[in-house]
Image 1 (tube, rainbow, N blue to C red):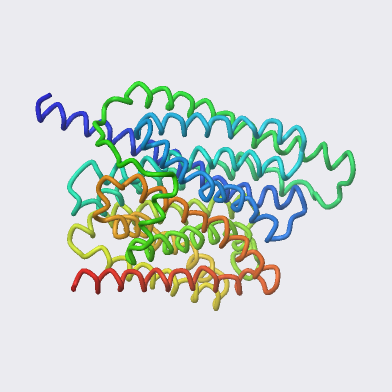
Image 2: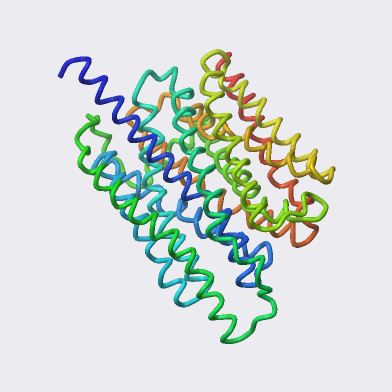
Length: 416
């Protein structure tokens, strides 16, 4: 194979991976629309509503290491096809959940969907890092994450119109018994329709990825057990980075999950559910714009310095939002999306530098850390139930401060 042919193959593979980033980002962000939808339909408090994220991100805790083992056994692209098919099955499970009109069945469907997302994410993060020089991996992964953010921008905007529309027309609290069950079944049919369309798309892409399964030549991984990746936690930089992935994902998801309800508050913007849900797209849109900018910026500035700046920026915006009201409060919290932009890919790249043939193990452990999205949002919801959503902003703010400390730690390590 000529160098030109390899370049074309590598380019085609990169764009296939960008598509996967787009898909799992969009699917994940739809949870931000489901939270207010299910909260209204099932009379949930903030803690209970954030169990949507617990069910989804809890899959990362249980599936990431088996996913890494799968990658080492059958390869990156074959594993991606498996993950897409599991995502398809999760989408289809929304149909029986709607028929039963039971909150816990929706959580089960979300867990299966997230299991597939976990496999795909274990594949894509190290794979995009390996398709080029190591020193440009943070910039390359940030660019790939921009497509993830494109999905998180588009999906909530469309989902808000499809899924949230009728909540403002019916007072759910006035319904009881059979009438309430019938209304829940009817209302969740729009959820089923949205996820059924996703299922068809995911199944088609799984077939496309399977056809290209031999397009990437992989080195044979070392023969190690399922839990071997935990040995990487003996490396301080990797362990600190994994902890920051936990905190970052938890903070980002906690803000996104409660953003619609936050913007609906009279002291913020006082919006109806659909309008507030649409504005959530700008939170994720900021991450998309920031990732394209960040990809270029990190070719000129040290990634750890950029990470420090955006982490402190996010914490500052949370402070401004919590202490102000009206337009300033609302748009300050939306602007955090711009700060979130480069955090995941930069933390991932800084933590994973130099792992070589243990890239799958490292990705598996870091994806386990994504379980922060299952822990931090319910914790934030618990604080909100006790003292309101404004007080609850202190939880993600503390997460961002620790991430800034990681950026400083990496700078010190590179200087010695």
